Amino acid sequence: MAKFLQRRRGRDSGPALPDVRVAEERGIRSLYLGSDTIQSSMRLSDPIELVLTYTHAMMGFLLCAPTPSRLLHIGLGGGSLPRFCHARLPQASNVVVELNPEVIAVARSLFALPEDERLQVIHGDGVDYVGQATAEFDTVLVDAFDGHDLIAAMVAEPFLHDCRQALTASGVLVMNLWGNHPHYRRHVDCLRQVFDGRVLTLPAASHGNVAALALANSPGHSLRLDALETRARQLTADVELDFMAMVAALKRDNPHTASRLLP
Image (cartoon, rainbow, N blue to C red; front, side, top):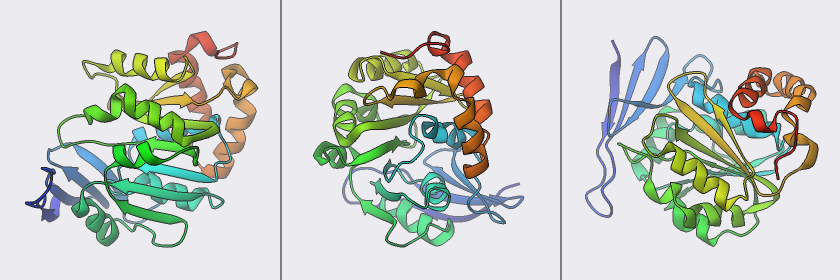
């Protein structure tokens, strides 16, 4: 049975924010935001490991952009993705924007979040931040949750358009979507409209999450899924995730791009 270590309530002033709870079970520390659904997990014996499968799928962006130098994370949670990117992509800097100050405090105190010049955490609204950024980031990773659902503003066209504007010419937007969400198809279609059809979907191995990969501009051969095995083998060795399995999942979920380029 999970042992709860800490519970922090959202602050009284400002927008209503979900309660933050932290629990520990069998060497895994997990973060909960306003519900009984685990939002982030960390193995105490190996804080860098990506415990939840949806985070593996989100790292699939490296198949399309293998050498990012500047990453933007919208939503911090327990810091799984920023922590992993900080460790496995030493050439890259990370900027994280998180609305809930209690999440930031817990990530720093209980989830081994690095604090150095390559990982900057900003307390603020991700929608506002992205709206002011222009062509600064090689990758934008959106993993935001309001305690009950995806944040509506972050699956809407204005925000997605701002994300595209915040990307470099060969950049990639990665979004954590729910495959069983009643509006999942609408979310993907909106992405395709904003990114001129250059969108791939990568289902996670469990729990129904789907990483949507939207490309600012097609990088040519990298979107030929049947030609990605060489890159996937190298990434598997360098980053220590199973990118070969990701390529197989991409082919199953995007059969139209298995042997040809996206637009």
